[in-house]
Picture 1 (spheres, protein in one colour):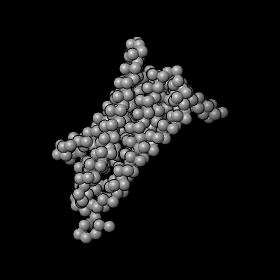
Picture 2: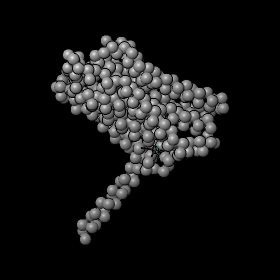
Picture 3: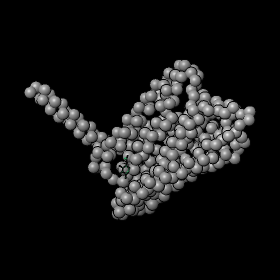
Picture 4: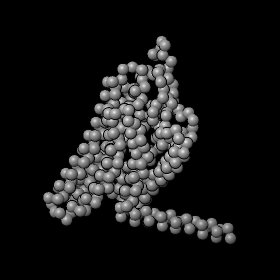
Length: 321
Ligand SMILES: *[C@@H]1O[C@H](CO)[C@@H](O)[C@H](O)[C@H]1NC(C)=O
């Protein structure tokens, strides 16, 4: 396409997080533990909610969907990052790079909308309790989830459309451990000022906007509850505090990554670890502290143990025949 003296870049060199061997071993342990824990935790949440009919309510279905998305979030960049820690040349192909960006933004955008849906669910449950089950019907849940995935997809494709055809010919060293728009665009050999602005607008302002919508909706719920009776307030607070924690952990790093105005201070590189690894890990931690969830997990554990014992008994009695 862009011929001439331009030798096309077909892969990127990821600079990773550090060059120190000792720190890399520490990071390896740290990342592996967090990754495995968040995969197991989130899968356990999905399994518990699906298998336990006490938890068949819109709130828990949405939570299961959030956990499912979180397994995706943590699997996009982390396994490669862990694998790359011990490689001298950490490379990613152009296709791999674009694939990573596509999934990061599809899944990330979906998670943002899902968090709004979860806030709406809490609003209906707390402010319109008598109509809760008729408003948040299964059909409504599925409809809202479909909107979440569609929005994520559109958000992702809308950004990719602007960058897939960028010419790359200069340096291919990317100071990061994964591919994302801000650093990807900077490597293109054209004037990228307007593109950078576009990405900041799309990703940065969407995450900031969503964040403020969420915080405003939580404040609105609390004010409504407070007007009605102050006794309900503490209950609402305990439900919402879990949500607010998730939201702050998810959006804080995200906003900084896209709107960070100081390119010489690579804080965003380290903050990206939060969204890639720590936030997906936080959800299980935050939600398993909730009482109903703990009880359900215990039930599931007992169920699995009993069936395991039964099959072991059957097996041994068959063997002794
Ligand atoms: C997501 O939510 C839908 C509808 O509420 C539910 O039927 C489905 O089981 C959930 N999916 C997961 C993976 O938990």
